[in-house]
Amino acid sequence: MGNPTYNTKNIRHYVNFEVVSDSTFDYQGQFLEKNVINTNGLTKTLQTFSNLGELTAQREENYDSQGRLIGRHTFLPTSALYFTYLYNSDGTVSSKYYNELDGQTTTFRTFTKDSNGLLFKENGVVTIRPQA
Image (tube, rainbow, N blue to C red):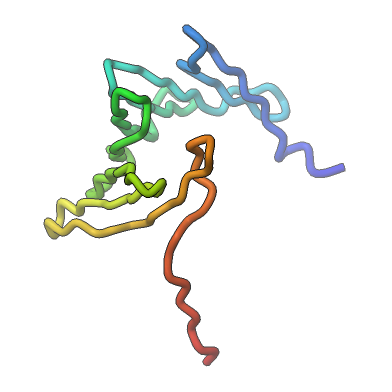
């Protein structure tokens, strides 16, 4: 058996079949952190609180009317990157990010969807670096 200190338990709270919060406990049942998800229209805000009640992480996700993720931004820890997702007619999804520090938009990744609409493959160029 593995080290029990690596074991955690996660308890989730659902409203209308969606997770709105979850709490994580260590192997001794001590509270570690809580995640809270607030939905306002097509925007979800995800926050993580420590066992002391401090906000340790926060991000916002935006969805289209079909429930597909179209944008996300991490506010805590602070990030200058704003990600967008474009659903292409050829069955791929393109991800780009805008960097507010330099004003540049960069293609991040492109994915292929399967027949169920789930992402199953990351498309890209593999760079092989020579051994030193």
